[in-house]
Image (cartoon, rainbow, N blue to C red; front, top):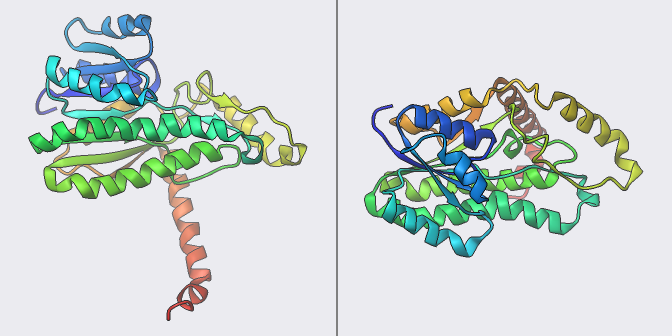
Length: 277
């Protein structure tokens, strides 16, 4: 990569956040990573004596975010790249899942990311440079039964990323929504929050989906280190993409969705245009 940068990555304890931190450090970048405990901070900082800097922050502690970001800008240096990686998957049939679970899902996956963006933007805007990466998901394009809250949160982050990209482009700031397919992370395992099943009517639709996901966990096609390298390539690009899919599964599924959407639009076109005054 052309020059050494300072990356602020949320959630560096595991998954994409950890892989990206390791690859960035290997390329000579400085990484400030958010973790949720002193133990996790020590563990992260042990990756590099000078390059890995941990900060304890829960992205749902909205009142603390501005202070942490300002402190990093002062004591570490200008944040060149913000990577909103902190997030988790909620699994549950919509009718069965309490609204409190939806709030929690959106607090972490959407509000936490937006709060981080709002904290770094004044600094990036003043400098007229910067890059924001939001880790979304192919679930920000496609859906499947049993992850409605998760898909909703990722659709929201995709939409906000795209609108934000238009708002900050005049200031030399790039925004990229990175949508991975299935990767060998803890997403479907340890970090998945599951709402207990209660309505038998949904068994036939949902059980095969859950079973397939559990059988695939740990054996997914995607390699997180290769995903990290793809993200670093996007950060280094002269014209970074606003949307970046990662994985051949994401490519096939998203293309399939766009194709079926086009078919449906065409089928209902006469009704669509019939409403013009």
